Image 1: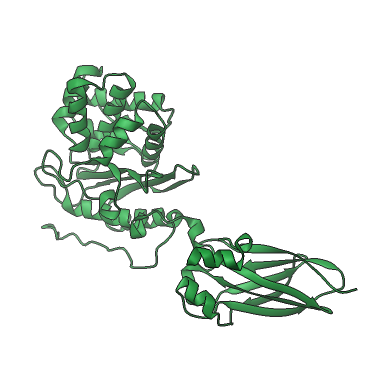
Image 2: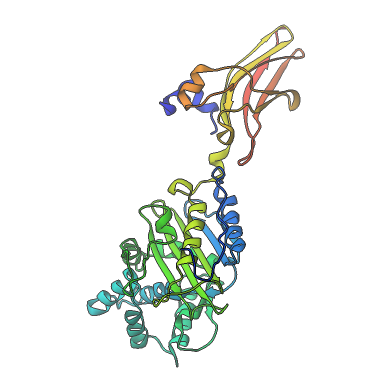
Length: 392
């Protein structure tokens, strides 16, 4: 119904665990959903309020728009996320076949550590698994042309301390999507992630807890941490692969189990993902723009009459201001005050969304512009309503 109503009114004018250590968790506010450009900041702030260092990034593949917050450009321990680079190398090098392919699939879908070290030691040069993992990051950065993807902090046994950035990871996943050698296999494996990792850890934290149909590579561990605590990372594809998402976190707080997996931190990451995807989807800024229609413009003598309606998605049942301009000069700034039963029925809202205004106009031909003033998120939406001509 909504689409046909907009068309009928004039499509051309429509713009439309409680922890043993007694950590206190600050819960996200139950406010109206914010668009992604604000949500990334809210997610990062929520992590910081709970003593969690976080980098957050979302990249829109359709538009190239990048939304970032927190420590998005800082290298943070990758934990098992580094495994996507191993799979990418095998695919790019033409080695994804036979037992290597089945080992790699197990490595990605169940985040198996032994599978990773087997492939790493078989193919990748370096004096330690830390150095080998660092080599993989450097290779991925060069192969996919991504600066600031990550680095290895030291050549140790802990390959999970190989560093990645949230910004670099969303760019990496976007590049993978458009790479015919790597994308089909790796994205398919990520979309078939198992509920539990091979170590028994529940992999449905973060992105999978906030939406459906996601393709992810998760990461968790203690030796991966720079803070002497634990790392919990969630990365991958959402909304039919349109967006790539990376939430990287590190904290000295909380306890890890034998996996090692920090349940409290994983819950923080899940809440962050839900802030990013209210209702299970990335919420774009333009979804918060006011929309409406100029139903008519008439001139009688030297009196201009303009009427129509408008709704702001962030104030669906309230009145918003409408500005009328004659030749770019403001002549009226009024709140919607006319009850429109047709508008309310079509958009399932209540309140007064109609406007009806008269103004003086001089003799001649004039351009009439109507602006719908934004409330909260979004931007001002305006409509140029052609021209009005007085009688001569």
